Amino acid sequence: MMAFYNSLIKNSAIILITLLYGCSSVPKLEGNVEAPRVKLSLAYQKIAVTNQYDDPWEGFNRRMYYFNAKADEYILLPVVAGYKAITPDFVERAVSNFFRNLGEFTVFINALLQGKPSVGVETFGRFAVNTTLGLFGVFDVATKIGLDEQNEDFGQTLGVWGVAPGPYLVLPLLGPSSLRDTFGVGIDMLALQFVIDELGVSGDEEILLTFLRSIDTRANLPFRYYASGSAFEYERLKVLYMKYREIQIAR
Image (cartoon, rainbow, N blue to C red; front, side, top):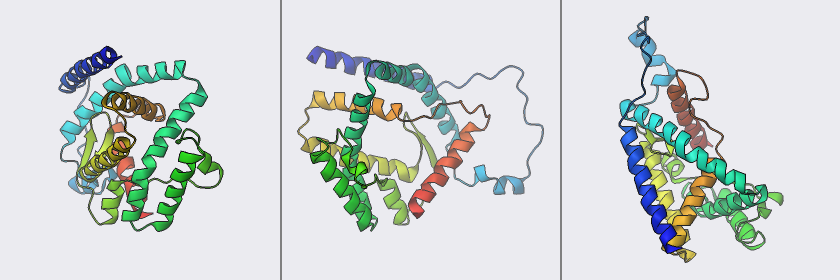
């Protein structure tokens, strides 16, 4: 088993290096691509919704977007397809429930930091019910008795505290974010790591747990890169993400 984990780490490192190398490439355009014929006025560019969000790292972001699309196409989605093919639906639901239950800790902490005691109490209730009656979160008993799942993270907490989102940022594999939300993701990961450490999970088991969590997360995301067929998919996703975060923070 130890050899398997060592091999898994080695192969993952090779794949990561390969992908990072691929990230330095750019999409090849068709030879007959024409430059825009209509030059937009500066006034129009200022009021365009796609220009309302700061994107000073657009070159890097577009390359990372392309990198994520290729990683999704050649690695993540095939792995997810294999996982779904060999895993019964009820096991998939159990895995999702388990990881969502682990995430309740960060939701609870952020709810309190944002001054939302009712959300914190409901989240704590969900965690208590699902951890006990739901057998460590494998079964979602809490939803059935009216304790709804909440969505709070440290990026939202910073927003509630008045921290601006900062520049738009596309993260490797994780996708759309902002400078503020990237910092928030790091804090939430530390909080989740605290929970995992408290469970007494060993290093090898933790790697397997992280691997399974990544597969589960992607399996539950219906988004597919370049499926919109729009030449402005990058801009649309940026606007949707930033607007969505504004709505989450304003709740």
